[in-house]
Image 1 (cartoon, helix red, strand yellow):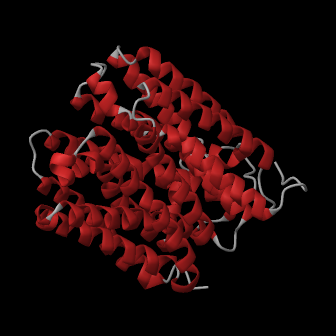
Image 2: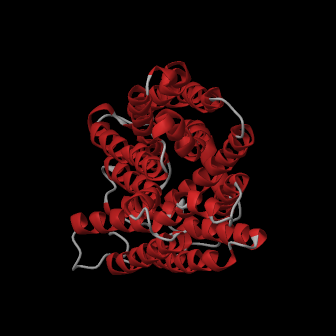
Length: 399
C-alpha cells in the first residue's frame, strides 16, 4: 500500500503519532478505572494484576505470531493497524458487560492485547516507512504517544472524577476507533519495503545473529522488566507518597502525571539521539531509571514532594530509552524484515514484563516500598548486554 500523494511526510508522521496515542489508550484502560471497579465490587485488588497480565500475554501472542510468520511484513500495515484498532475498541465495550464474570473479563483483556499487537509494532513500521533517516527521533515521538495513551485513562478518571467507570471505557473505545480512521487515511509511506516470497516460520530468529540487533533487543528486554511493572505500581507508589492526602482524584491525577512525563522523556531522547546517537541515549536513560529505582525507597520517607519529584523523574527516564532500542533494531535489520523484527522484539520483551508484573503483584499486598528494588534486575541486565554488543560493534552513529 503506497503513500497517498495528498499526504505529506510531516502530516503523515503527525497522523501516525496521533493514531498511536488514540489506539494505545486500550492498553491500560481498566487500570485507569480500577479504583471505581473495586469500590463497585466488580473487581478485587488482586484481580488487577491478572487483568494487566492478560493484556500483556495477548500482546505477546499476537506479536509472536506476526514476528515468527513474517506476517507483519507480508500484510499491509495500515489495514492490519486499522482492523486491530476497530476490534480492540469493540472488545473494550464487551468488557463493560462481562466484568462481573472474571474469566470472561480476563479473556476479553487477552483479546485486546492481541489487537494491540496489530497497533504498536505496526505503528513503528509505518513510522520507518515515512521517516527512514531519523528513526530515533520519529520513534521517540511515537513511543511518547504510547506513553501518553497509557496515562490517558488515569487522566480521564481524574478529570471526570464523578463519571461512572464505564463512561471512561466508552470514551477509550471512541478514541481507538478514531485511530483506525486516521491510519486508513494516511496509508504506508514511500519507503515501506513489502516482503515477498513464501512465509517461512521462524526465519526472523536469524536477526539475533546480528550484533546490533542482539544488543538492542537485550537492552530492550532489561528495559521491559522494569517499565510495565513500574507503571502498574505507580498508583500504589503515589498513594504512599501522598499519605493522608491520598484521595482517589489525587491518586489518579498524580498517576497520570508520573506516567505521562514519560512522553516528554521519549521526545527528549528522540531529539537528542540526533546528536548523541541512539545507543548512548538508551544506555544513559536505562542507567538513570535504574538509579532512581534504587534511591526511591531510601528517600521516599523524606516528604511527599520529594517522593513525587523522584517518581516524576523516574517516569521520565523509564520510557526515554524504549524508542531508541527500536530504532537500533530497525537500523540493524534488512528493510523488508523491520516489521517482523520489531514484532519479535516486542513479543519477547513483553513476555519478560509479564514475569515482573506477576512478581511485584504477588509482593504488593502488605509489601513495603522496597519491592521496587526487584525492578533493578532489568536495568542491570540491559546495561551489561548493551556494553557487550552495541558499544563493541557501534550499531549506530550520531547524526
